[in-house]
Image 1 (cartoon, rainbow, N blue to C red):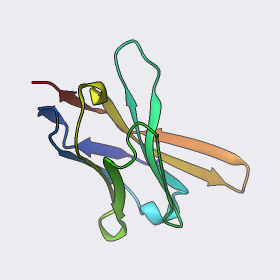
Image 2 (cartoon, one colour; image 1 turned 120 degrees about the vertical axis):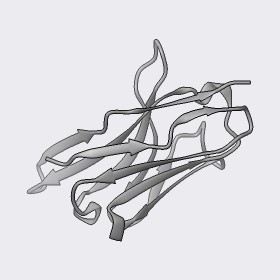
Image 3 (tube, helix red, strand yellow; image 1 turned 90 degrees about the vertical axis):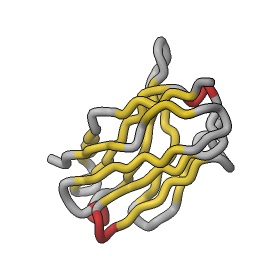
Length: 120
């Protein structure tokens, strides 16, 4: 069981920046993928950014060029740097850990979520 604790959300004006942090209870190097998802009111949860064990990254088209996912393996922490924030980025952001065991069994672990509100 991987425990994830997010921090760094808050209220920011359009065009501003925030950095989210996700601290894991065990080595993130042992986890196949770490990601950030978000869910806005009335919408489904969507992938924002993901970093794979080997270090490659994926981003939703809507955040490419504005958001950056990174990790500090020594601190078991994943970050999401969000720049040029827009009102449509407003959502609850969730950290995710995706683990594959024996090449067949997949497990997803979630943090409690952190609210990001972009508004003037």
